[in-house]
Length: 239
Image (cartoon, rainbow, N blue to C red; front, side, top):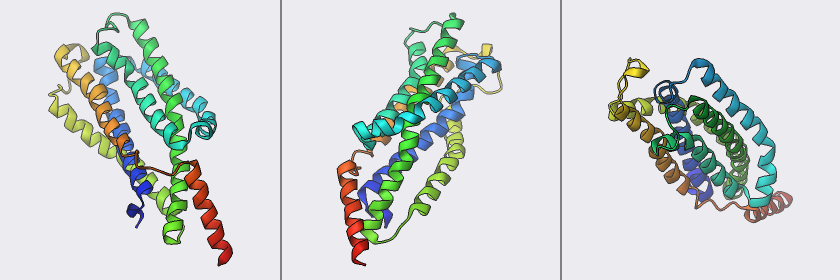
């Protein structure tokens, strides 16, 4: 029944593709940090800390932004913006703008973009939960039943399952680009590194934007949700 409601269907497809994107990126990050960027373990920790701090700083902005521009617009902009910022260092390296020899500059850019990824990415993470609550109201109006537990439970399951599925997809990508395994970073050919970077950044971004296009039919804006709440209140009063 839930799949027959257009906004629910649009949100679920977009969330599933976003989770899969995150799972693949997470799985490929080890290859990127080890081979493409040749980072030391301590440098990888700096990037992780920057992402975490950015995420914490971005959480309080989700509600003000949603009140100003509506949840759907902020969600799409947040997903697209965070993923573009996260892919920016790779895109710059592929374009020849970020030289391989400038280690201090590369690490600074990576840390800055990691902070930006977490900061902007906090918006869709927070708003996805609010949007699930909104589609629960739409489901209630359509079918007369509350389903928050089902929606949030399936959402949590899909988020965790995406890590395993993302690892499998990343493994397939590694095979498709013929990236060498169990070799030292210095032994990897530049052509293989380029293929890895293309798969990690522009290739995955293209898939992500296809996923975001599924959000276009989502029509639960502030006005429509207010109408649903009024209809629910009127229905509950007459019972």
